[in-house]
Length: 199
Image (tube, rainbow, N blue to C red):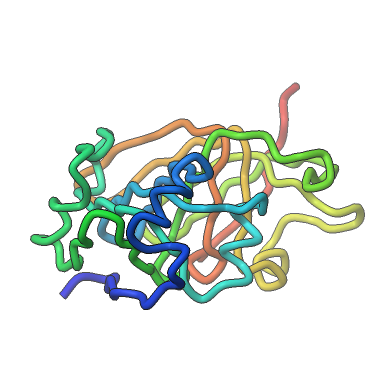
């Protein structure tokens, strides 16, 4: 049994069949890491920040998710999520959504898009390093005034976004990624420390 468990979700009519295809222009690609799998799929953010979606929902709804090995860097085939069947995933029919419990998400790389001005958060940046499950992550944390980096920070936030991030997988196979934004599940963070900036 894998660490994560896909379930068919009884989504609204607007997210099934031909109605889901009508939503296609609003879908955005997302890359997710659980403890033992990389999942690429599409989400319908509906103008919300991905951090807010992860924080406020128990499940993340994904269009045509494609689970694969942790060190895979390719995009899934256009035919759908057939590769997930051997990994314990329930492969959806064309037009079907799947749900992933947000508790299973260790890291999420949101789509490359700039939030509208109303959604942007203006905070001070501090470089930090953290350990989340089998990953070491280094990046910029955006802090409220008066808040410092430490485990108290992750106790107050369900998901912590980092920008200009470097990700290293410590397990087998080892690999690394450099991403513009990564969102880390606080429940998986074992250690977080501030880094001294030399600039």
